[in-house]
Length: 435
Image (cartoon, rainbow, N blue to C red; front, side, top):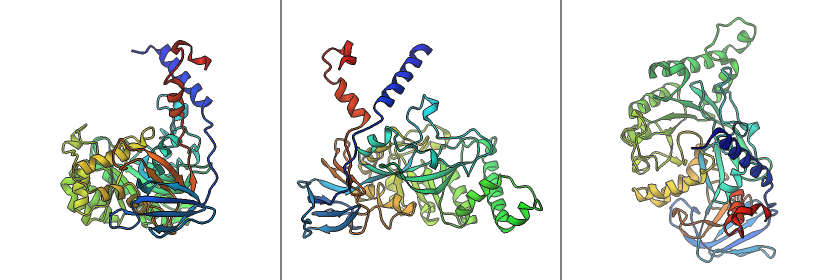
């Protein structure tokens, strides 16, 4: 067991190492690229890969197919028959908001401030220099949704959609609002789930009243509301359907209750976790709600997840529910956000068709968060986010050989690979600092 002194030394050592390796190899400039001889996945909606080429000019894919030729100035990447896919997307992460969980100064995932709930917004603190971004990018992730952890309130704040490269990684702020429901919901629901539902209804009713009487509220001529006006403002795009409401929920009966609430207020619902979603898959499909899940979470960790199953993804998909993947449906995952791909492979091993698994890492989250017009498909006119894999991308033993984001080939070097290279063959392990 570590003593406080060794823990402190450990954290301080990690901090020094992070600072020393923060500056990674500079990225290549955007280029005209031609990927030839690829096994192309995601070029249409059939799920069947085709043999062909991908022509990229600047940050866009301009042509895909067997007959496509390179430009005179194209830099050629020969895929040699290996799989080529769209860059992957994790629909629920904390990327850019945490580097070391045990070091508070590197974590911005939640707030204990009682003044902020639905309005809590991480966008401006997302750190593009986080060492976790290049690490997950080199594993094939090119986009992610960053969602705060739900703290003291029913509503945890707002999600942000990011690209995993560049000084300005934010693609879309206020992409969704997250709420928590069930045994682990905090704040207003303590004592009974019924109080959580009442708190949600009060918030939505107040937001509607605030919208209709904003001027009177500002003159002090309106009743008090259950939430601060900033939180009510944050709920307005949820109520008018511009953005979805993500609800972390697992138990089958709780899912039914949230679906009823969503129908009552005509919300665009995304269920997060939904461990028992397979028990009410038809209800979820009928409500046109989507689900973000971690396919490998199959063990009950509470009375809400007694029916957790490895077949959850397959059964939801079979019922017609749109699904997307994360690597952890609980706390927003950051260090291993790329493991959503491993979860997808396990979902396939438990009955999910491979093309549906790949869609859950690309096209489906793009549709959920409103960017499917330019991301999620290996087709002309779409963003040049492309990965060339060593083998089947759903196999855990496969790795990216080339990661291209917005037409720029990304470095496959990270803090972790540098540590690996430094210590894999030390001449004198006791004096490695001399190297």
